[in-house]
Image 1 (cartoon, helix red, strand yellow):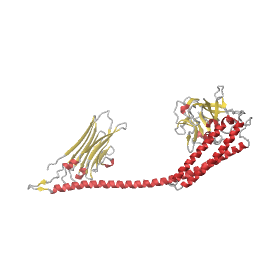
Image 2 (image 1 turned 180 degrees about the horizontal axis):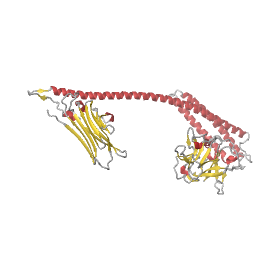
Image 3 (image 1 turned 135 degrees about the vertical axis):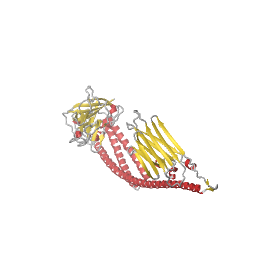
Length: 554
């Protein structure tokens, strides 16, 4: 019987390399599951890199794959048949109905695979992949894919053949047809079984994820309920404190005992700004009242779906009641202030000297907004932001930088910071024994009391490289972590404690993270004492007594 041989050849050539992949198949003349010495198909793959000094590539692997008859493009359907690599450059074995021979060197690789079972040739696609790498580590890939397994069926001459006596002997052809059909059907069934297993695995994973999601939702609900309870308690405490303070002020106003009297028997600045401040407080309380009522309504709507919804609603209703009481006290205080303001209408209050000639221009045009005092064990950041830790009245020495006057506190000019408007420039100055040792001038236009401290706003500085070098940190909040608090920080780079480099940092925690910021008390005003940034661990840094923040209006 004349065997028809289908030869599918794909050859890819480059300028100085050759890549060749061929697959020769023959129609089966034995049952599909029988092993034939000559095999049903032979695959040959080779890669050649020419001897060219400009081409530094080396062959690292040569691999032959096949794709199962189930089809599809998913990479998981590809199966490796044979492989040679730079670690295993030789291959010679017979196993699993395959005969494999191969070799690999830096410039040449060959791989021959003989499929001994007829059924092995019924796969749809075969592929050969060569991987190369040059002396710079750049990888490249050569790939060839051969299709056309259906031709094996079409050319396998499975029709009945004539016998010696001229009659048709249809039994061998029929048997081969049935065997071929059964083999293909078996492959299909295996593929379907695999897909069903995958589907069951995905269903199991989905069930596990749903259970995990339900647990997370329950945990989240408990966490939200707990947080609302805690937050509600904190809000109630704050409301009580605010209410007590407002009632105290109201009683003192009613008794005719203002908090701060000047020589004219009037509150300092009451004729100019206290009414507007009280209106702001009143508006804020009314807005808070509306927001809490809205929030209570939302909680009431979702109360049906949450087990503790009723408890949350009761908690919010209590807070709303507290806010309503504060609103009443605020209104009474506003009325008392209005009466007091009218009584002072014809009197001139003695102004507080808040303006200074900081730069020696002969004009007192800089208003002191904040003074930080070293080593008083009061954190600088909450003191600047909220006035935390600062008593109602501080020493006169804390409202200026006269070294002969004592000062043990920070000073926060509440009016200057909380009514931050029409600011032209901001000046930060470091003091040692009452004298400025370093200063930075910022553009204050369009700023707030929290965002003026920014590298993009620097106009002038005592450090001549501050505007030239990069900053990994430049902010008031600085670098805040569990073991360290570095505020008002201007840092160039981190590289470990021995290589940390910058211009300014206020250490706000004891003892601190690195040896260069160790201290017995806080805050510590640490700065580069020369005209450039410095390693924090070096001798080119010093510590200031105080820090001042001044603002100049437009």
